[in-house]
Amino acid sequence: MKKFLNLTNNYLKKSDSLLLLLCLIATSYGIVLIRSATMNTGSMSSVYVQILALICGIFLYFIFSLIDIDIMADRWFALFVIGGIMLLSLVFAESEGGNKSWLRFAGIGIQPSEIVKIIFIIIIARFITLYSQQRKLDKFTSLLPMIIIFSIYFVLIVGLSRDVGSALVYLFIFAVMLFAGGLRISWFLIALGILGVSSPFVWKALSDRHKMRIIALFDPVAVDPTGLGITYQVNRSKAAITSGGIFGQGLFEGPMT
Image (cartoon, rainbow, N blue to C red; front, side, top):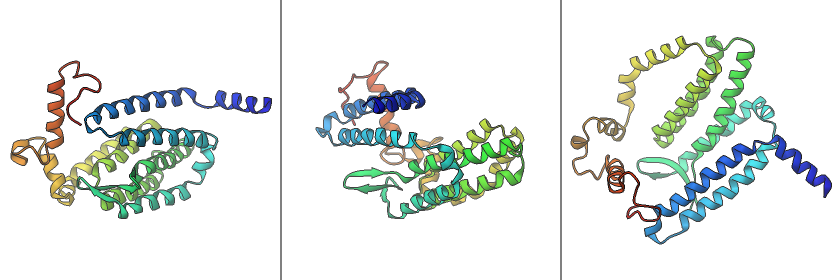
């Protein structure tokens, strides 16, 4: 028993307890808000799913916190393949709102692109750390493998799920990590230039729905005169804000989900 307590004490000292605490607070707060948002449905299923996800998350936290992240990073190619396979599973995803991002099992949804984000971050962090130590991060030959990995994941997400939003999050993560890693600003300017030149081709590649969502930012009435299509979510958000005022309608008091 004494040995177990010592091991537990050593684990708590080495683990990031503050990070775990902040995650628990944020998740618990989210569960309360989910219950408030679904109060008028009379169903607790969404809350139960989130509580189950929280329990699984805590369990996985303890498991992964015992694994040396450097060992995982050194096996980056295996991680890359695993991530690719997970994204390929989007072929079997259900279509929801024009995107195929979720795999459903007995009422529980899993979004592969969210899990692969962790793999993507570990892989890119490994390359940035390696090349920064060698003072080679600004070389094109160093950037190339990272660009290839990002491009493959990006194409898989957009091509299989049509979820451009999730794919753009990967782009944001990639750019921020390179910036934090010390990549020269000139590379970002070059990337912006390439993006500007290629924007007409990107526009042609977008689906009509994605084009309408962009145009709706500037002329919502012309795109969706009824307000029940492309701009439906935005209109609901405006209604929620205006009906709630500065302080809102109160916890568990909202009339809409």
